[in-house]
Length: 467
Image 1 (cartoon, one colour):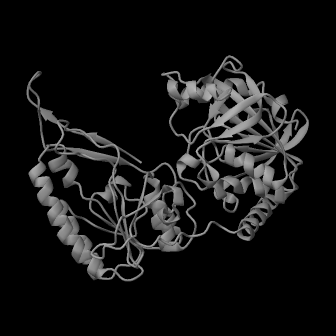
Image 2 (cartoon, one colour; image 1 turned 60 degrees about the vertical axis):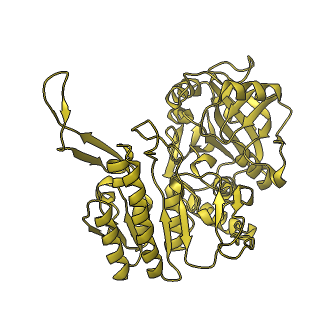
Image 3 (cartoon, one colour; image 1 turned 180 degrees about the vertical axis):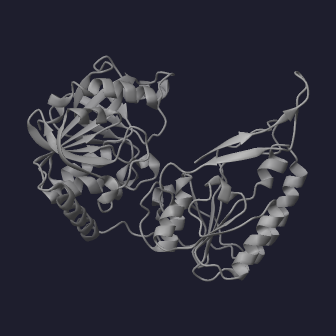
């Protein structure tokens, strides 16, 4: 989503004074949101206050106009008392606009006391199956010298109306809020970015020291199981059926294209194509350069299926969901897969525009069993080593020195989950890294990576097909 904020001033040059005649112009979200998904599942969404404008009015069943914290909280209380089902979605702008940006700590504190009082009443109105989420998009700390957004990390509080004890999560993403709301209200796995906060890995969970008022350590919150192998197999079979219906017989070979490498699609004599969203369980990529389409066709006379793009762990997508396309291809009938990635070079073995066939993947994206060391995934005899980091940030110079000392040649933010899945599925596997930049360069950004990957894609055809 986006907004254009128009703020009129008056006065003479050098002494302009800001007026109160501000106008906000909202841009509708460029893609589906969890509000849209809730509507598709028949879940009512009631918007209160400015939050409706932020989404340009899209995704709401009903709305209530409200201005200021007190008015918004009153409207939320009325909606609860009336028994609104589904999602009640509201935002409190005064903490930011009235007191945060103006460094008014006293009024900020008084407003927190008022909010706490209202929350106590709200909690008394919740039914056993209700939940409450409180979070923010940024922080305006009124006790700092800055009048801008002085807190980049913000808390998220999830209250479930059962006996689940409190626990803390080290880090999360804004998208986790929407994913959790969707899962709570529909019972379905989130199908956009983010993850259900109830599915936090044990390694990322901190427990409160005692239960309030008891002095007794809390029980470990029940962790929902990962999907069973049988359920994963059923998902893969259903997705394979979708592939057959839309694309026909499975080719022997598959190629998954990384950031910017969809330029290779221009060289394909296409037979059929469809979008990821048409395949059961496949997640639409949320990053530029990943188109989210599946194309069957011939490249240099060889028939193959090409997946343009992938989702990523740093988008909040679970490893099970990231693995599903690999297992789906196997169920469909694919026997060989080439995984391609845009990557940064850690030494002189890879120059911008060159391609390296990877023999080993160093998995820094998750340490099985709590090990403090990365897992090495051996693919073949090729000498090049790919370091798989969680992302989404690009590597610092310190990162580069450490990874180079460990023997890595290139670094990226994908690979490990797909490599594990391909090996588990019994697919013949080839991994190709297209070098787009020198890792650790201060001026690297995603747009530059996409441009370099597109430039290199033209010469990559011969590398991606043989296995």
